[in-house]
Image (tube, rainbow, N blue to C red; front, side, top):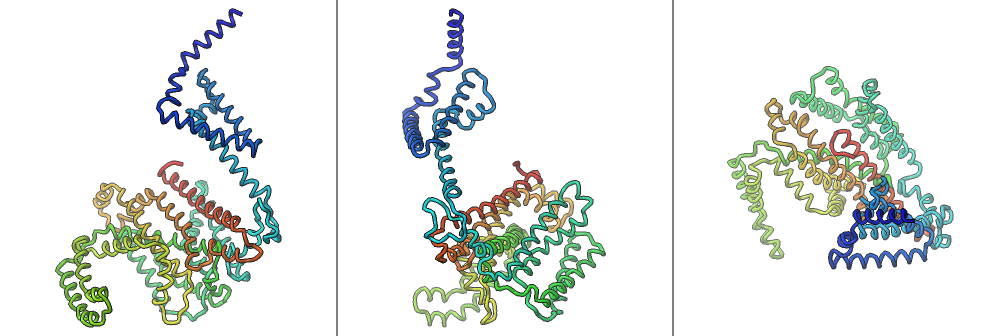
Length: 555
């Protein structure tokens, strides 16, 4: 008995040396009046909420409470006897390092677990999945009716597109999936050398994929062979090849020159031949809808905004020799004088003070000339790029979408019918490219000045410097921001529903208008959120992989 008493006494003394109640209370409860009040309030709120959940869902709340107590015991034992396990150390460092954190952990654990359990009951246990029993009289009171997703699958996927054309949508989908699979296989390190030729072919197909998808989803109008288009396209392709060779961006090679000469005629002949067969007859873009329209708009904006934004960013930072003032000012004065010839007539027909002021519009020419010389030293490239970027960024996206639809007919002959998706894509691309330009410009500014000087010392021209030195580094730096722009473009594509397009969000109005699917708004919006989450997550995951491969950032 004496031995046991001695051991207990030694244990108490040892614990007293390791644990100080006064310091513990001062650090966690009684350090200040605000801290004490916070702990009291948090304890009451956590206790009341946990007790209420014990009454409504006793089993799951009891399990959470037991797990919380076990975690506390593990931490206390580890602290007192200096024998922390990996689990107790993690719990102490992340969830229960203090009294406040322990209480918050219990509160949020009960809250989250009960929320998940409630969703499980609504989405699975009490839900119905029969697509024939979706009418209001069959809908459960406390469960979801997922049959609407299967019943309305045609509208959700392709909108108002005729069912007879669905095979073209599936063909486009299989084409993209096949390209991804081939790209993944040929990018394996063990196969890169052996499949080098196949990789080059796949890269070429990726460059042509927008044209291929356009043929599948929009179709080709049957028409005569245009020799002007044939010759003009060939001249453009060969001209670009010779320009890049002249600027020493690519090496001159007879095979590639022959390929550049034959590329456009071959592609144009294939295009014309497909049009003659009428297999891929034109599809009215207004019939696109659902997920198909959402992906078309998002993919088009992503593909087009990146090169356009890159050009705008380079234009804004360009340092080309500007137009001298001795040319700008005489031209501005002459233009202003000519403009003032219309002022008397405009002033005489003005109906109010605002129109009278606007009749003196030629003064703006002098203001533009002053801004061009004072801000940009006559650099028209930088002035135009900066003006475009700042103007577009100052306008809401929805305004550009409406303007695109309203103003599109002015660029075509009278009576020409223009499908809504086309001007929407153009307006959305202009909006996204302005923000993309600022993102890329940030990457360009992050490149040390020494990199520019090193490229100049090597005798690189501007095109070589940007192609081989500056842009590869700048784009690596802003990969997260660029992918963030892509994700934003994908999610913000839902705004097109406001201008009357039946995308994945807009088509839900048509679904809910059906008497068989009335009242199923939550099920549709949950599905919509899941689709956007999956798309955003895939792009974000690929961005992280790309950063790791390029040694930029960590997982």
